[in-house]
Amino acid sequence: MYAGVPTIWPSCVIRSFEASVVAPATRSRVASPKSPIRARPVFTSSAASPAPGDWTGIQFLDVPSPASVVDHAQVMYAGDDYQSAGSACGVDGSGAHDSYAAISFAERPAMALVTNTTIAHSLHNGIDRVWNGAPLDFAPTNTFTSNAGCAQSFPVPSSNVCPQPVPCD
Image 1: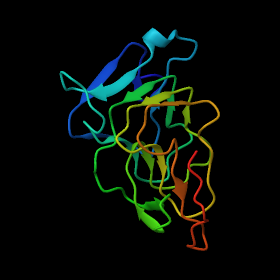
Image 2 (image 1 turned 135 degrees about the vertical axis):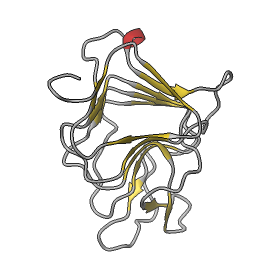
Image 3 (image 1 turned 30 degrees about the vertical axis):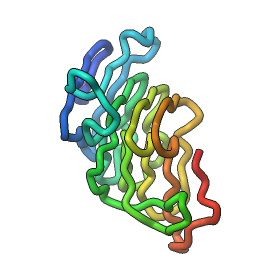
Image 4 (image 1 turned 90 degrees about the vertical axis):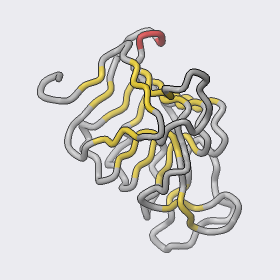
């Protein structure tokens, strides 16, 4: 705990297999500001030979508190085929569909709560934005490496009509 907030400290490794980390709607944080990359908290597979999709990922199922952050972390080998709590625009032009990612947001946060984080080897997208409404860009401070899908999915607009082509950044 840090100031009453559940905190995962630098160098901590969270290994998961066929599960997810569900972030509370209240306050939580994953933080190691100014730490060298080797000291970053790591969320990864528990498999001896990790593979994309080994575990579900980190899920924000409700409107997250601005105090719930993932900062200076690594999220790897997530993005299994767990059905998300929302849908995003499909890059194949098929309209809205369930989406899967290493980190998922079912509701739009007030600001980008994932910062300075490396998201790698997801079976699908890096970050899913599965709310209805305007996008929020998580890309500027994060690194997306070797993910099978988009760095971040595109949320379904308030009009319920996906743009063509659907951005896949």
